[in-house]
Image (tube, rainbow, N blue to C red):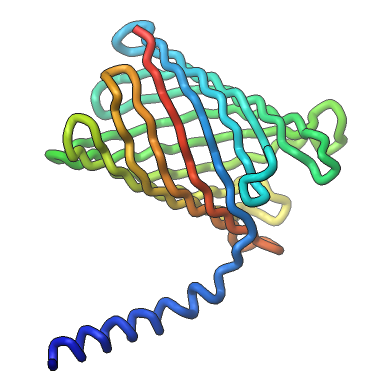
Length: 228
């Protein structure tokens, strides 16, 4: 009886500690992000990636944005890699028109394996212009430095659970450098074959240190294929 009461008290204490955070969380929207990516290996070091993604918002009822991204990846060795890419995005406006956005990406990655655990660090610098030809402010880019830490665990040849966390630092705001967004993700990857796999994940995306911050709860579904 003592152990039962103690477990109940511990459970109630945990609920009390978590309740303020749950009540203070501002839920803005739920979304669905669906993507397809294809990789073509040029040789042992270089590969080209092409991806298409649709992002639904307003509780998954409205196509909020869609984009095409292409990148060139260079694998120095099993640990270090580099890539450069370009993304063209159509983002929905309030009047249901779409804003045209051009994003340029530079990535550096570090990967290490510890038995069944795979750890990865991605450093990204991105610069994006919105409505470059139709808006006077479009020629001023929004520059971000993003840091993403991820972990994968090899359960077997087919299933790989993963978690990741990412921060977004706006480097050229008028009021100075500011961390204004972070993203947490957890999910499962299933490998159909050596060239085809699918990922299903849950994403928590939170804006911080800005006026009227938003929170997104997103279901992510992605399929990838490697061309030989």
